[in-house]
Length: 112
Image 1 (cartoon, rainbow, N blue to C red):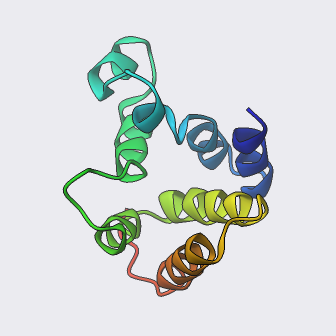
Image 2 (tube, rainbow, N blue to C red; image 1 turned 135 degrees about the vertical axis):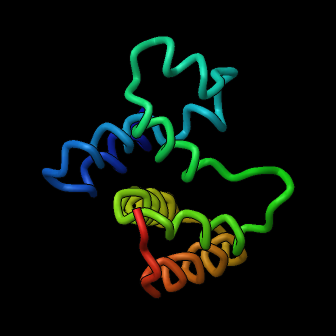
């Protein structure tokens, strides 16, 4: 839970980003599916944003980050996630991967 709290703390006062930050790993780290989250009362827009933050098996990490760039809110949460991950003292290879992703996210292209 400490990681999730660190991500939430990074997004500031943006309530939508806070909600997304609390949920950002749910689809990757649990058995919940998008449809189940909607049935549980999570707003469809939030589930859509959560889907943007969930890496798919068939895509590369670069493709995934490009997909995240479709939304300002998703970008904000992913940046916070990366910062939290960097503070966990990753190895050199992971640090390079995360740093490249952070640069890629700062390269604009937002739509939603």
